Image 1: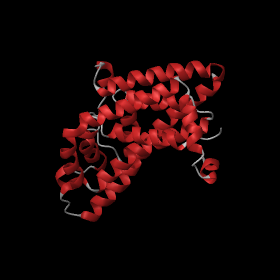
Image 2: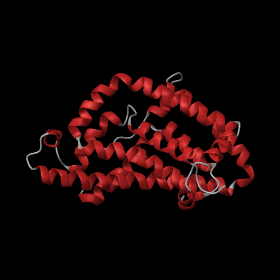
Image 3: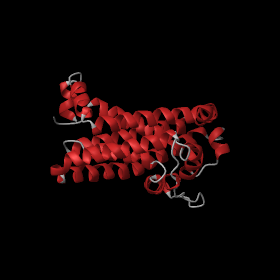
Image 4: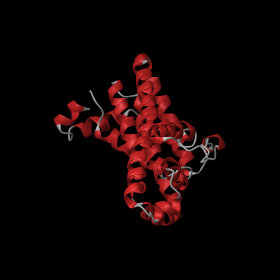
Length: 248
């Protein structure tokens, strides 16, 4: 079976969204937006020059997204390639990866505390990037610095990518993960006031949201260990258009 099934893409896309809504990314989104645009939060909320601020937000946000996507997609390609090189040990990788994903899921639910997974490296807001290239570099730094924090979620997707039948399929999964992180970032940047309203309302549900995400990861890990994930993917492919299968 070539390509990657809809199930894997949806899981990766959802994982990116969960990463954005994590406690160490969501609260710092406004600070990063202010950093890459060189605009204060006050100006972002009530811009004097709306055209200038919108251009800065759109251009720098896209550059920032390109920066972190490049890192995540490169990681996906590396894990997928490693999985292909170790094809002889695919069953071991599948079972071992499934067990790790179950552990990550349990951690995300909050049942187990692992301090090392809550660490991250924050770029100082004083380091103002220069132009779109600077925003891209900040995006790459974001991906590297926040990897320990979103590690359980990202790690689960990378482990899943390593079990794909082609390197391309693994890359597609990380493209989907990056999109799940990028879409809310970009929409939040375009509508910063709506983002603040949403963020305040979402805080009361964040724990329940992460418990749900953890349960899904536990289920994915169990499906990998029992090899039912491949059956689920094969079933999903029956409903996938032929043109999409060939593209993926």
